[in-house]
Image (tube, rainbow, N blue to C red; front, side, top):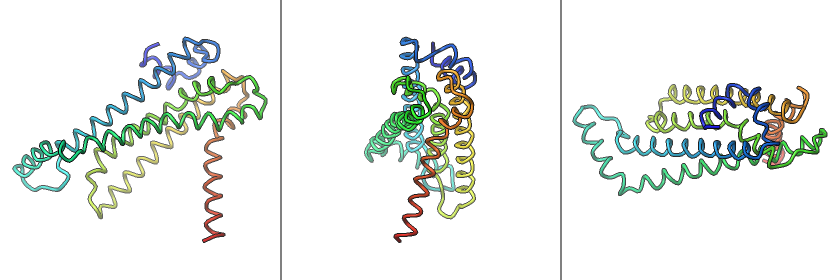
Length: 229
């Protein structure tokens, strides 16, 4: 199974993917799924690194008024970029991005695993659920990539006081995250109903568990701040 097939089947044909490629029973397919996820993650990380480096190297971070000013600033950025160690900081930030996306599926798995045990799915194992979570979290990974590219190319040139651009940026980010969250829910629904034989209600509950926990933690934090200012 190629990376493109993995993306196409997981994102757009989840009912087919989770039925045909049973991750629990086929070790080879499990290994392919893990490998494809990390290929996608590494590719996104490399693309984000190149995008940020090229942008900071060749585009002026300040407003200029003439063509000559633009050319001079671009050349200055290109010559000084390596001396300013900009690449090192960009590389470190993108490595952190990749590490976060290694931790996110693990965290989602740790949250959902007790839910599956609680509602009677005692046969599920951590590794199996993690492999499933890698597939279902692809929409979230894709949305984080799109938002990161937007930040590097658009918000890095943000001018202080330009609130309209800032509001538009956050609105677009919110819509992208909302769509990716619902998209992840669709993948989780098929994954939990097909691979773990859950009914519709249990599948939705298992998908929502991390979001509900996050909301609960925010509410607890708010209550603590109100009671203990």
